[in-house]
Amino acid sequence: MWKFQLYGFFKNLQFFEPFIILIFIGWGYSLFQIGILVLIQQIIIFVLEIPSGVLADNFGKKTELLVCFTFYIASFIFYFLGPNFIFLLLGTIFYGSGEAFRSGTHKAMELDWMEKNDLLEYKALIYGQTRSWSLYGSALNSIFAIVFVFILPADNWIFLIATIPFLLDFALIATYPKYMNKPTPDAQSNLPVLLKESIKNIGDMLKSDELRKSILSSSSYDAIFKGLKDYIQPIMTFLIVYLCVDLQLDESNQENYTKLILGLLYAIFYILSSFSSRNAYRFSNLFSDSPSAYNLLFDLFGAALIIIGGFYMIGFSWGVIFFYLIIYMFYNLRRPILVGHIGNQVPSEKRATILSVEAQSKSIITAILAPIFGLIADISIPLLFFVIGGGGILVNWLYFRKDGKKSKINSESTESDEFNEVKEFNEPKPKKST
Image (cartoon, rainbow, N blue to C red; front, side, top):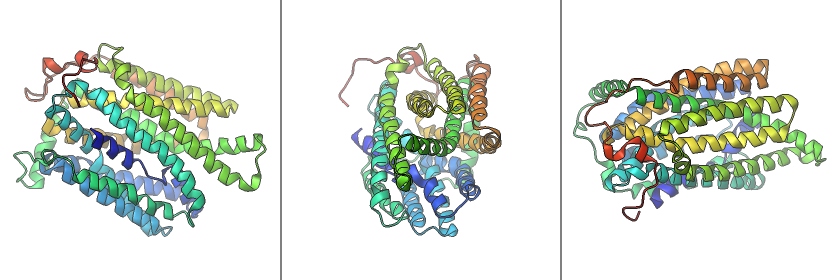
């Protein structure tokens, strides 16, 4: 388990992440050009998402994760060679490939480990703890980013330094157990045949109303969160500038103050989010089943967005920042519950594929919502938060909360009585040491 924790910790040490939009703008690129890069990244993820899951399930999850980190490292090197747009484009392509190969694969490996060690009933607890280490990494990442911004000779060097934790993660993954690379019996089939069979299997599994709603609830929530992050960072930067004026800080160092405060705020966000992730299983214990828990969090997320819109409208900067923290905590409280619930509904040899379907659904919804978000934001940013918050609550009540007919996926993938939803998130007495 400590390897899973270190994996997440190193993976989130992307030192450029808190300032990447500001770096690209500083290199002279417009928001439109940055948007083109984001669009290309989403297209790459969309195209490779399901094939990557099929390859992981059939040729080895460990091998796929090693390839994934090779893509990440290559992308950082191309970003380092910037600001030429061709290098940024290549960096974006490799980064998108890494995202597609990573999403779902490591979660499936964690579930395989739990299944092998008879720990599936603890999955919300275990996944919440490993995710909390990812958030510790994100918090430390924000602190390191502040330091590097001030000491490095140029902005592009921060991308080269980001390869160091990813090289450590590559070495760590190489030490994962061999059974995590065990292919399915169909591994010798050619890729087109595997894709055709996997798409048929996905279709069969998605006949389950419960699984389909779980995937759509997860991907739509994540897409909204991810889409709004791109708007909130410039908003927070704008609000921090006003705070600097209110505090009568030296205007000549305003850019440095902005980066410092922004980095510190992200560190606080991630530290408190790690606390919520570690306690996701405690929260879910308050409910009879996991859908009740994650549906409530969807409603609270929507309400928080509406409040952010109101505070932004009246210019209450601290209120916007505080509720941005709240939605970060909701996101990291909800994610472990949903991953465990989705993983429980499919057979182990199909988990990476299904989790890739979930990630691809997120990419599709993100691509659909991005231009809509932009259109509404051009009219009014508070209106954007009102519409998204209210719309999210409405969809949650009209579709995700509505009881649907449950159908068994197949005898192999149906949950056994031993791991039913009620027991899933109760905190039982440990059967063995982990």
